[in-house]
Amino acid sequence: MDFFYLPIILTPLFFTSLIETPLYYFLLRFRYNRGLLVLTFLNIFTNVTMNLIYIFIFPYELYIYIAEVVVFLIEGIFLSIYILNLDYKSSLIGINDKGWLINSIYILFIAFITNFISYILGTIFNSFIYNYIKDIYILLIYIAIFIVEIIIIILINLKRHKV
Image 1 (cartoon, rainbow, N blue to C red):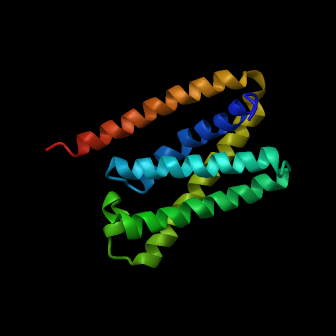
Image 2 (image 1 turned 120 degrees about the horizontal axis):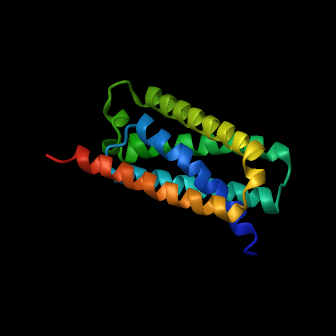
Image 3 (image 1 turned 180 degrees about the horizontal axis):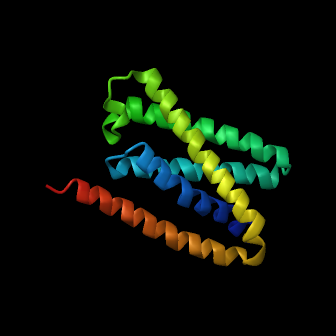
């Protein structure tokens, strides 16, 4: 892959991560950093995959809308399976008594809201700011902010588990 594509792929990834990670984290009320790790890898997978498809296979505007729907479904379904079946102790949602179906619908709704907010903010960002700043500078800023964000969330979890 040409180095030219690296900022084009990584900039949306870190922008999306800046928006979606805290939204998912606090809306799903993760209690352990394991859930944060799964969420981060899921976000990396969906974002990079959809961007590579957009750049190399299907570079049309219609694809962006289709990809947003596919990403929200993948993230919502995977998070439902992960939280409710594999690691229910990681989230407060998995241990309530509303049933698997209601909790799954709730998680899908959170995935929709989170991806919608991320899409709207990304569109606004691309319209106004992105044209004036070089890709690499934006990427470096996002990486720095994302690292700080992850550290803050981990510290919140550590403080939560202190006795």
